[in-house]
Amino acid sequence: MSDVLLALGILVVLATASSVVLTLILPRAPRRSGRFTRVVVRSVQVVFILISRLGKSYETKDAILAPTAPVALVAQLLYWAGGFILGYALMLLPFVHNVGDALSQAATSLFTLGAIPVGGSADQPVDIAAGATWAVIVALQIAYLPALYSAFNKREGLVTMLESRAGLPSWGPELLARHQLVGITDTLAELYDDWEEWGADVSESHTTYPVMLLFRSPEPWASWVTGLIAVLDACALHLALCPGTAPHQARLCLRMGFSAFNRIGATLGWHPDPDPDPDGAIDLSFDDFAEAVSLLAEVGFPLERSAEEAWPDFRGWRINYETTAYRMADYVTAPPAPWSGNRRHLRSGTVAPRRPPQRAPGLGAIASHRPTVTVESNVRRRRGEPEGPGG
Image 1: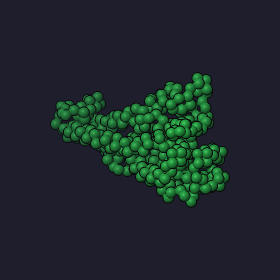
Image 2 (image 1 turned 90 degrees about the horizontal axis):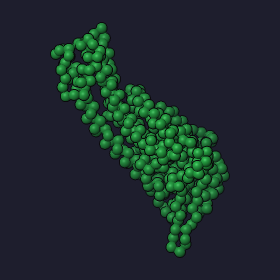
Image 3 (image 1 turned 120 degrees about the vertical axis):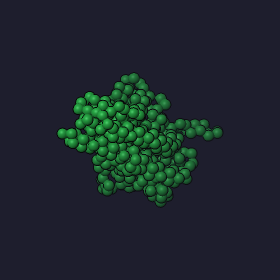
Image 4 (image 1 turned 90 degrees about the vertical axis):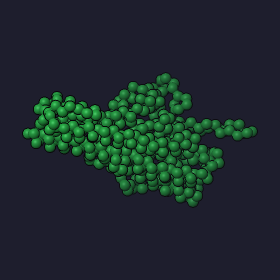
């Protein structure tokens, strides 16, 4: 029986250590060995989502969800501590012959610099191993947090820039319209190039560290998910409407963007279609697409095709990322931006970006365009609350 307990304890310790190594050290997406860690993180997320249902506005819900990632990191650490305590307690049982004493000695050995062995000198190697284990875990965790926050800062830089380029919440047609209004459409190629590189960085960091998905932007109405959807929609619109003049960077950005969505989705256990039918159906309706094309025509964006002519190409591009992007936006409870799908945990419908008036000396203010809320909530209609950020 003693040998069985010892072997079982060793297996528990090795399994927990494997989870630590795969989560904190190995630079690739965690597989089966990291399943329990993902369950812990997901459980914390579900608890916060349930609590966020008490919030009446999106800003309140976002504030409730903001601590999800830090709490998940603490829960992850506690899960590892519990695994090591259980494993070393099983290894100590043959020496102390009491479950309570075994758990107490394992915990004491793990969390303190020294412990008095209850079972005598025979169990000293287990005590030493337990103490060394936690010292290593703490050292790894100290190195792990800067890596997370470095990846977070890299992710949020371009997302913050979208506030002036694509509005809050971000929307693809708005991005193209704003660039046309201020005469900087020549910078779109550079923007697409930056987001291609950004997509590669996010794909690497968010598959290696899936807990990054729970870190929310400092601004409630900003989100890396809706930001990426907006940029991909802008690329798809540009290529579909202006096939002769659209920069080649738009095509590269699109491919990197939907590859990032698919890789991150696969890390979560989803199964994105790697080769969808370009003639297949998408959730976005042609009427919504045509309305966006009309907006671009109103602001003078140089169009080479009509909405009807461009629709097949746009649909062929969007089908590569729409399903996974919508699911990701719902998974992280992203702001309900246009063209970003539904949110199961939000009571309000789509909120469109508010464009500030464009002003110039002697011209006054040019009327700003703001699409309507597509599914206005009953709560907003009853209370007369503003439809989006800024009132």
